[in-house]
Length: 234
Image 1 (tube, rainbow, N blue to C red):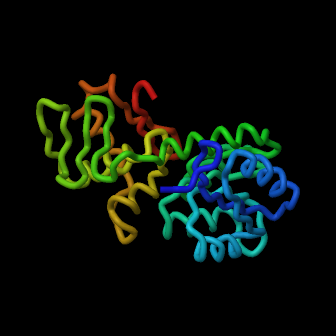
Image 2 (image 1 turned 180 degrees about the vertical axis):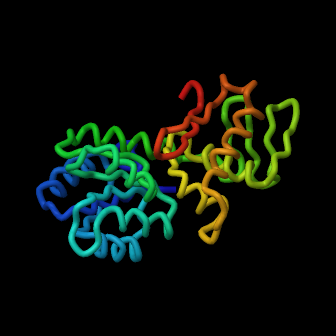
Image 3 (image 1 turned 180 degrees about the horizontal axis):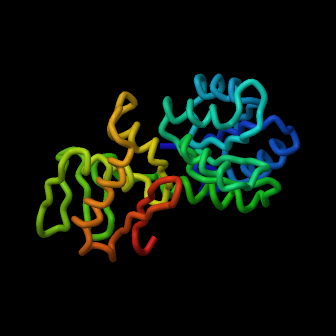
């Protein structure tokens, strides 16, 4: 259980940005709300911080010396299961696509309102705060990761393993956008050498199987990037 201050969990944030003014501004807003902020001036220093301190969420700037934010994001995804917000002065779709492919959860363009960053941090913590690591509930649908089953309370559906793993991966973090390359690595493994269209094929099969549960959850395609699962009513 995390210590609490003023009703807010003292989650630990990593802020990686080479601009001291940005770090000071974000540090002020986040510490005021009860978060503990650990700072780094570049990606290499950020990994050193994470090696010695458990971090709950990372805020990462793209343009940094030694190791930029994209490489850092990829390293974090390999080593840790935490949400990542990427900061950048760029606002091109291709830059955002590259960030999502590296595993970022959210994206903010500089200049930004510190309060909006705070709102996004809170939203990501809600998204990642799962009640159980084994059971994932999508309204009527329950995914049992331990027994590899999907149930609606009346009947149980046994999915092919890759379909189940893909559904569970998306459902564990509702609203998070996963790049196709990331899903292949997470579900099929980093040594997978097959057709990258296999993700689209499995997504279509899941949509067909759960067509009657569109009021509970939907799997959206984000053109040119990947997929995300949205839970109705959230």
